[in-house]
Length: 116
Length: 110
Image (tube, rainbow over all chains, first blue to last red; front, side):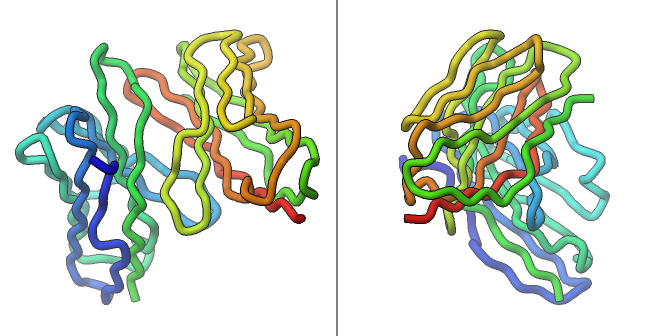
């Protein structure tokens, strides 16, 4: 396993369209996280899963955003009715949590979204 | 709530210069502290971490010490190289919450 992968790496869409991103975590990792990063800022937490359960969602995650991890492996992040303000880098990370605490996260390369 | 404040950049240094990037944090509990690095065109990579007070994280010549009394986790390197040019992010995690600083861009010139 070579690490966390994300697809696509780049996405250009028109305002109002729906987009879906995929993340494949490191295979033995039970936690998966989604972040958003805008230019000149650090990543901002969106949501995370422990196995297939979505345990926490940030207030940044409006009702246009939905994330799934149906089998506890890969995850998808969908944005409906995209807006120009959604333009950002969307990062996925995974970790192995054995104690219930926040273990070291390993990041994917990100999906850069541009909404025209 | 938890937060991280990081030294603003950009920082430009000559090769072999000493590097310090300041990071201070606010947390209600006892967080773990991290430095991540993002090289051009790549994803974030863990550089080093410390999980409790007075721990020192180190990797690739970089060091940072978890200082509870000053709520700081400053990143240092004694002699930077051109290949260290990247954006550096300080971060903290506390149970289910992970917060990042805004990042500091470092450019090292030969």
